[in-house]
Length: 369
Image (tube, rainbow, N blue to C red; front, side, top):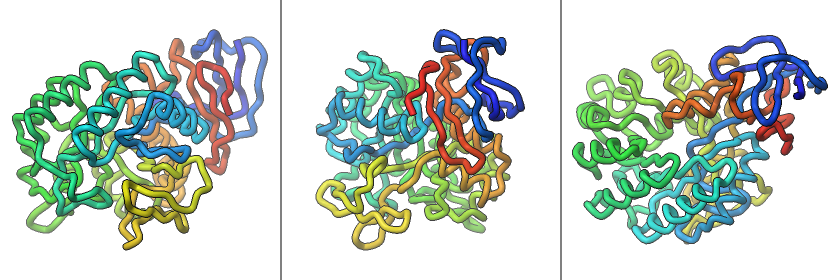
């Protein structure tokens, strides 16, 4: 057993002064054994990122292999995320099928850090396409529905971002019944349409405020449905996608339902200044990723940076920001075995310094960074 001392401990729910003990890869309930002293800051459960478009120079695509998924999990582990949902943005039916097949193989191989997949599209509203290729956006078919339900049955978790304009309430209900985490996004839908989709089984909203109908005085749109309803809401907290003042409103309106995502791209974990998304050039400048026309194309962000933004710029209490990167995304996936540091839990954890910078990462009690 090893005891970690010198940093406050956030167990997924509560922030406390004290120590963290680890024995045989699990969190212990007694402070015994050698002591490893840390220089202030906080110990948190391993961070969980439910929107990871790529990393290490690789973008999730129809060509993604199990080896690529292994590499991405390792890259993000070194950025603080010990669990990720690799995310395929709008692509062809063949690409979707190929990624699901690779994900199923990764799950069978028990790739460390692989939580499942996130399919962001192609069933979106082209009016809110963002950086998605409008030529590939399309309504959901019976074939798509069957493919997604089968994928959910074989993957640890499957999140699907869709627009109510491109999927019927019956399709949403079928996905939710199959275990898919249905998330609403890239939509110009009305409040009524959003509420109908949520009533049918959608339980999440993808990158709240971005690429969706906004809160209006007479038409509240998806933002209004998200803030006054019950769905979990992903948030890109880089201070670029959403203004800190707007995030402050969301924290007040949806306590307990917000979680942080990086929405990172292939550049994550590298120092490249540009790369391609399909056939389009993506520029990396001043903390932004954009198409050549200036459209935001994902984010140049890590979860520790997002936590820092929430505390220092939004004014969230540290324990609230920590939950948004640990227990909250775990709850969104319906998992209680990750995102916590309770006695008996797997000892996946990170050390953030007093400046919120990542100081260390442990998986099953073994230091990997």
